[in-house]
View 1 (tube, rainbow, N blue to C red):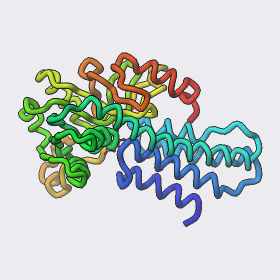
View 2 (cartoon, rainbow, N blue to C red; view 1 turned 90 degrees about the vertical axis):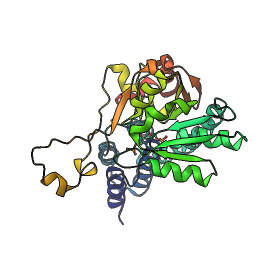
View 3 (tube, helix red, strand yellow; view 1 turned 135 degrees about the horizontal axis):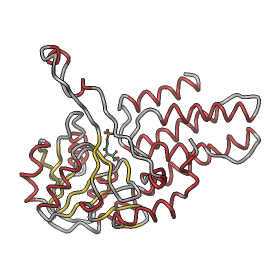
View 4 (cartoon, protein in one colour; view 1 turned 30 degrees about the horizontal axis):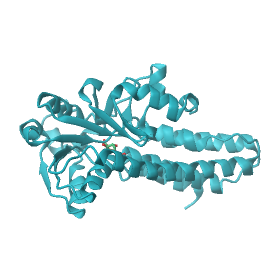
Amino acid sequence: MDQLSQLQDTAEKITSMEIRGAGRIAKAAAVALRDYAKSLEVGSIGEFSRHIENAAKLLVDTRPTAVSLPNAVRLTARYTSADVEEAREEIINNAEQFIKQAGDALQKIGEIGGRRIRDGDVIMTHCNSHAALSVITTAFGQGKDISVIATETRPRRQGLLTSKHLLDHGIPTTLIVDSAVRYCMKEVDSVIVGADAIAVNGALVNKIGTSQLALAAHEARTNFLTAAETYKFSPDTILGEFIEIEERSVDEVIDKETLAGLPELNVRNPAFDITPPEYIDLIITDVGAVPPGMAYSIIKDHLGWEIGDMV
Ligand code: RUB
């Protein structure tokens, strides 16, 4: 496969959700940019810059909601040198650094979040988040006797991936349909979910249905935690930008044949929702467990302003 086809292949895998989850799409984009930059044959820095910009745009346009994706692309695609070989080297190093830091961040989140879990806790989680799973498996690895209630997560049923991951670690797991969340919440000690984006006001954007878990947790006085690497915070929201909520194909919700029998039916498939900061007890990040009110500091101190307007 040539360099461009490889890049397009990664973009296609992110669009089709063969590669999914905010952290994994970010890392896949960094790898794709690194490999593209490595083998790019150009005659001038202007040409190099045009190709990298197009590649960055192709990757960023695959899925609109997870801010990890533009953040990873911006952190990887930046360079200062006007020499092609040096610029290429900068991009390769940026990508390696991002991939390493993303791996370290998951481990750190596990350590910090694991301390919030007590022996005997029942945890509810939604969708399939490696950050949330890092917290759960770390707590279990510390010898805490915990169990997990995993939601199915319609329509793509990522809850099955989560259940498999937990069972592979030996963690007792119960799968429930999404509509059983409120009914089961009285048995739960902590809810832990991942994040596709954290806005400057501390609002959480995550898989559709997350805000229902938060509402039910609030009502039951149950802890609601989100696990989010610093690169999932959105610098653009400081500038007043909204985070776009992805609407996916209705084919994921209802099969074509059934829909053909109901020609007047309108079907929607929003993939994410927004949980307001007042429903979130703590955000577990790689630089510490912080209340949602500290989102601005995380963006300012750990991401920097300059990554907000590059792509
Ligand atoms: C995945 C999802 C996950 C976050 C965090 O949505 O909402 O909770 O992306 O995941 P989708 P992680 O399946 O549509 O990509 O912690 O692994 O980055």
